Image (tube, rainbow, N blue to C red; front, side, top):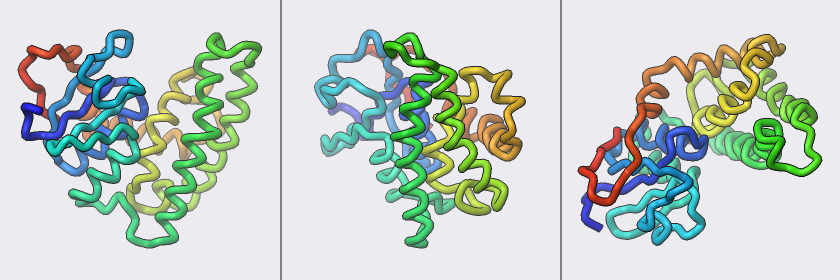
Length: 216
C-alpha cells in the first residue's frame, strides 16, 4: 500500500457504502476515498475483497474490512464523539436486533419492491406491504422518542436510514402520503442534515493513476 491512510472503496448510492461513510465521517477518520463504478470494479479492490461488493476498507497494516457494519464498528471504536454506540448493554442488544431485522427481512422485501423485474414471478406491491411491517415497527418506536432507540442518534439510526431512504424513494409520492409521519420526519431530518449531505458529495470514478481524494 502507498497510502498512510486507510483506503475506502465506495459507491455513492449503495446503502451499505452510505452507512459506512456515515460512520467514518462521524469518527473524523481521514481515509482515501475510491469511488467505484460497479460495472467496472477496480482490480485492486477485487484483490482485497474477491466478492466484489462495496464498501471495502483497507487499513494501513493490510487488514481488510468488507462488511459495512464492521467498518462502522471499527470507526466508532477509534472515535465516537456523540456515543452512537450504546454503552448500555440492553440498548446495544436492541440496536443489534433492529439492524439485523433491517438487513435480513426488510432488505429482502426492499429488493423485490424496488427491482421486481429481477425476480421471477415476484410482485413488487406485495413486498412493499411486507416491508411496511418494519416501517410500522419503526413508526411505533419513534412515537416514544426522537430517534430509534432514544433521544440521541445511535448506530441503529445510521445503519438503517439508508435503506429506509431507498424504500421511500422507490415511490416517493406513495411514501409521502403513507401513515408514517414520525418516520417521514425522522428520514427528512437525516436527508437534510449536514452530515448526510457531506457523505453524499459526488466524486469521479477512481482510476489507479488519479491523485488521492481524502474523506471526510
